Each structure stands twice: as C-alpha cells, then as structure tokens.
Image (cartoon, rainbow, N blue to C red; front, top):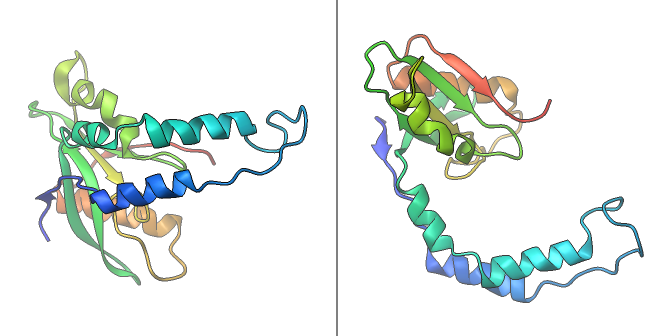
Length: 179
C-alpha cells in the first residue's frame, strides 16, 4: 500500500474509559521515607493521576499532533507478513537533502523528533534532511505484531522496508533509547 495521510482520532469512548479507570484507581501503602528507592513516590503518582484525570486535554494534544505530516503504510516483514506502520514524513525542499530515518527507542516515541522537524528539513543553515520518523511496530499508531520472535532485526527490516517504499535507496539513521 502506498503511504496515505493519517489523522489521529481517538474515540471519545476510549477517553471516557480512561477517566473512569483513573477515578477507580487504588493506591498502595507506601513505606515511610522510601522516596524513589521502591518505585514512584505515592504523592507523585496521585498528582499525576489527578493531572491526567482533571487537567490534561487530550483533544488539544491530538490537534497538535495532527498538525504534523502523519502517514500510514503497509510493509512486509520476512516471517511476519504485512504490518501497518505509522510515521511522520517531512521531505525537505532542498534537492540535495539527505534522507534521515529517525528511530525512537523505549520508552520513547516518534514525538521525540517533532520539535526538530522543520529545522532538520531545511529551516536552518547546514545539511538538510528528508525526515522519516516511524512509530515502531507495537508503538503508538502502528500495528502490533501478533507472532512470537519479533526482535531487533525485524524492527530494522520494518524501517528499511518503509524507507524503500518511500523511494530512499540510501539514508542515514539516528536511534534513541537505552541499550
């Protein structure tokens, strides 16, 4: 499938379900003076729960994400068949731009590149890039893999197949996350 534009549209029922779950959250007892030694401090967890329930505006965040050049396309991964990938694709207006595969790590996402997109594509002086930032399989708006054995090699293959689909024969990569 050729890449098609994609708009994020989380159903209101999913947001209502999240609000209900946050309302029903139960919190464990906490060891006195444990701070971060045994996980997140209870006060921080309660504060974040309240923020997500009462303050965070998903529709505002969704609208901001939809301002980005979001796409979806299917790629075939050996031994796993076809899978749908979400990705940002910001081509540079510069003819000599270098294709850049910007890969997020765990626990990151494609959102890591959003503040740099216009600069990488050509608003700044220097090297210009055609930026491709996929949501890896099992992340964000990409499909999940339903078969055991999907590892680093398959993630790399999915990204390579996406770059081929977009017409990039050669490209550079940037990877994030921890090893």
